[in-house]
Image 1 (tube, each protein chain N blue to C red):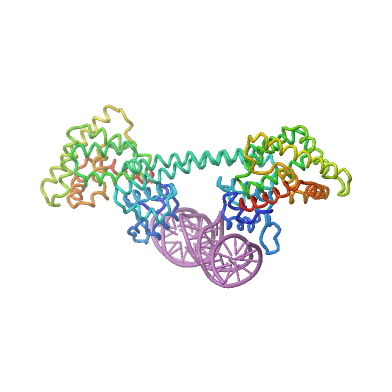
Image 2: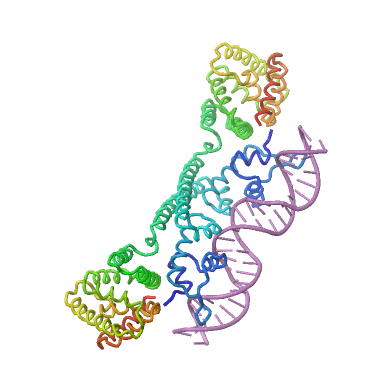
Amino acid sequence: MLLTISQLASHCGVTVRAVRHYHQRGLLPEPERDASGYRRYGAEAVVSLIRIKTLADAGVPLSQVHRMLDSAPASFSAAVTEIDSALQQQISDLERRREELARLLAGDRLVLPDEVVELLDEMRAMGVSDLTVGIERDGWILLAAIAPDVVSVWARQKKAALGDAEFRKIYLATDEARSWDADDPRLGELAAWMVDWAANRRDAVIGTDAEPVLVDPEVSVVETLLAAQLAETSPAWRRLGELSRSELTPAAQSGLDLRRQTRLAGS
Amino acid sequence: MLLTISQLASHCGVTVRAVRHYHQRGLLPEPERDASGYRRYGAEAVVSLIRIKTLADAGVPLSQVHRMLDSAPASFSAAVTEIDSALQQQISDLERRREELARLLAGDRLVLPDEVVELLDEMRAMGVSDLTVGIERDGWILLAAIAPDVVSVWARQKKAALGDAEFRKIYLATDEARSWDADDPRLGELAAWMVDWAANRRDAVIGTDAEPVLVDPEVSVVETLLAAQLAETSPAWRRLGELSRSELTPAAQSGLDLRRQTRLAGS
DNA sequence: TTGCTCCTCACGTCACGTGAGGTGGC
DNA sequence: TTGCTCCTCACGTCACGTGAGGTGGC
């Protein structure tokens, strides 16, 4: 009345192939065979197989299961305790993954920090075109990949700038400018406006000293708004970048160089 | 200012090899190469890779991830909901595994139902030898594997028998008899005592009709106590089986045949 | 005789890991 | 020149899955 391999397997909740695999790996001793060469299992095989399955289900590699099976009860229970905390870890991992899935449905929230998502929402609410918001978003994504630690400071500076009515006008004008011809005369006026605003803003910020000025705000405007690779998306923007850079004060020019160095150090 | 493969990978929490693997599988489009033949990634690659990683971490096979990525948002969110409930399932599975681990430390409790474990504890408390309790335990394990549905009824019947002081004496005597010679004259007396007790017990049970008698209790004693394969562990027990079977009443003999049929049907 | 279980190779699968051997930028 | 990153094969790994081809009990 000993068990056949399929009786053993199904009672322990594993496949027949898995039982044979455990024999091959030396985890479960080969039992005696009957007259037909069939394996016949006794009660101890049931006990061993349940042990093996329980540990394997808990994610223990079979090589480690092997060592655990013939280890002293004391170190066995220590190992089980360890596995248990690994299981707890897995559970909290899964719970985090459920949250991430929820955020995946919510759109950008998994890709960018909340503060940047809010910034983009604010722009959309201001009336900035979807295309320009998309370009902004891509810029932030790349920035987050290359220099994650500056994202937060830059986001706060941009948020502050958006609080200024004049900046909002400049930003909206720049949005419209995307589709202008590269030789449109209004690009010169817009460039001058930007540089003027940035110079004033810089004095104001340096005056208050409220936030450590990691990035020269004058440079920030030009760079953030018209960073080289973003400008590539529109001939008018590329021209706007050239015009505004040539109108920068010498002090800001050197700040721009500084910025480049910082970026390299950060990457 | 596009990303290299390692910048992309580390920002998304995957290995460089995994990114290449996703290219091979057609999950992530191959980006443009720079002058040195290096892959250069833009923001959309970050978004795609985070999507892929999130789904893969949730246990979705890559072949299915492929289909989900280019499915409509509506069916995408339906699929994500499905994955989420799969995650919930996994979490409760892990929690059950933690319980099973705890029971693994507690000994037999994973291998046998609680009622049988209690039965074995009771025997140990009675003074039955560890070896005999071990043989009993092995018998129950095999029974549970072959005919799980009869375990509960048999356990209740055995528990009832252990409530009888005379049965306990018989059981302890049988325990001692294990090491006797096969021709010991006391074996005949013990066999007669067992059959007598079983016959009386049978009348009592049939009189009360408290529990449906699935198994003739007289047969139950002989079979449970001395089931053929357990008897093999001791020459004296084998002889005790022969003696008691030959002393059974004709009615019980036919009941024994009935039992054999039931066992076959159950397996 | 048919259907079911069992047996032993031995190749397949899934999601990458891991060198092997070589090139390009600083 | 050295060290680091990148490149393309291509075999290895882990825990089995899945036939292929054959035998034994009812």
